[in-house]
Image 1 (cartoon, rainbow, N blue to C red):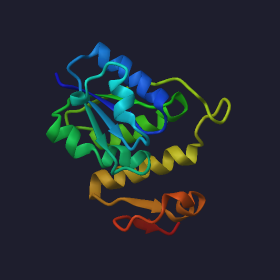
Image 2 (cartoon, rainbow, N blue to C red; image 1 turned 135 degrees about the horizontal axis):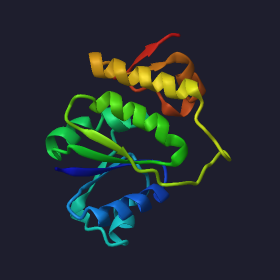
Image 3 (cartoon, rainbow, N blue to C red; image 1 turned 45 degrees about the vertical axis):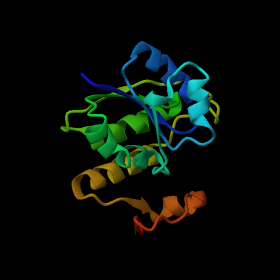
Length: 170
């Protein structure tokens, strides 16, 4: 059994949960997907050897946290168990995406919520975020096509316009 800890970028409190898991599973590498700052120093200053921490900055949202790292998870790390670390409010959507990406590929995903902070105050992600990303994940899984809904791209103007993505005008 090969474990991997997947740190979904979005806050160093998520790294704290990964550090806890890294100490529980001393042979498990930590794959950090798109976390800013000096995250490697954060891990090493808390006792995690730098040789166990791998940084991947290809993702720019939750779907690509999984799709952009899938090949590394499967081929480089040969993981059959992935501990998915993100905030509590974000776990439902993350696990739905993980299930789409890993389903029937010999990889089990285990939710490992980091707690808060809940930036929105008792926030639960809207169903349209969850459903939209579930659809995007399954489309990627079945076709290899990544896309954004036009409305999402407009609402989240900070994501830019990745040239390798298509846009669905719904």
